[in-house]
Length: 272
Image 1 (cartoon, rainbow, N blue to C red):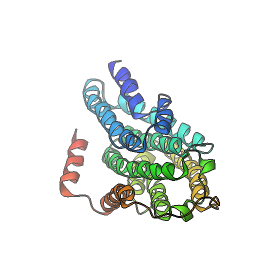
Image 2: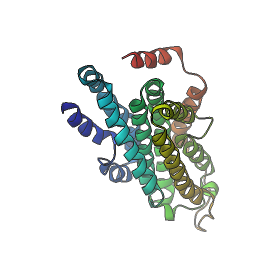
Image 3: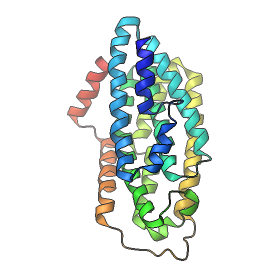
C-alpha cells in the first residue's frame, strides 16, 4: 500500500498518466531553460526515487507487484500521449506529451524487467539530453515568432535554418529514429516485452507509430511551410544554438559508445 502512494506521488512529478495534467500546462508557460530542467532533471530524479522504493518493495512482496504497476501506468501514458499529440496546438505542450510518451517507455522497461531495466535507464539519459536540447530550440522559436502556437510558426527552415535542422534532428532522436540511442533502447525494451507480454508490445509499437505521425505532422508544417512575408532570415546567435548542439552531439556520441564507467553503473543498477 505504501508503494502505491509513493508511486502515485512521485509518478505525478514524473508525469505518468493520469497524473500528467500539470505537465503540459507547466511546460507551455515556463521559459525554455526551465522546461529543459523539468525534462532533463526533475523527471529522472523523481523516477529514480520510485526505483529506490521499488527495490525495497520487491524484497517485501516480490517483483511482480511493482512490475504490474509500471506496465499499467506506462501503457496508459503511451495511450494518452499518442492520442493528444495528434491534436496538439502548442509546440511546448507537444514536447510535454513527448516526455509523457518516453516516460511510459521507461516504465515499461522496468515493468518487463531483465535487460529492459538497463535499456530504460539508458533511455532516461538519452531523453534528458535530447529533450533539453529541444526545449532550448523551442526558446529560439519563441524569441523569433513571439508565439508558442503551432499555427503561428511557419517557414522555420527559411527564417531560422540552423534551428530548423537541429529541431528536426531532435524530433527524430526523441521519437526513436535510428541511429539515435532511443531507437536501440526502445528496441531492447520491446524485445524483452515480446517474450512475456506480446499483446502489450504490439500495442506499444502501434501507439509509437501514431505519436510519430502526429509529431511529424506538426514539425513538418512548422519547418517546411512558407514563411510569413514579414519574417526575414537572420543570423542566429551561437550562444543560443551552442547548448542544443552540445546536448545533441553528446546524445549521438552515447548512441554509439557507452563509456565504461557508465556501463558499469547501469550494470550495477540491474544487479539490484
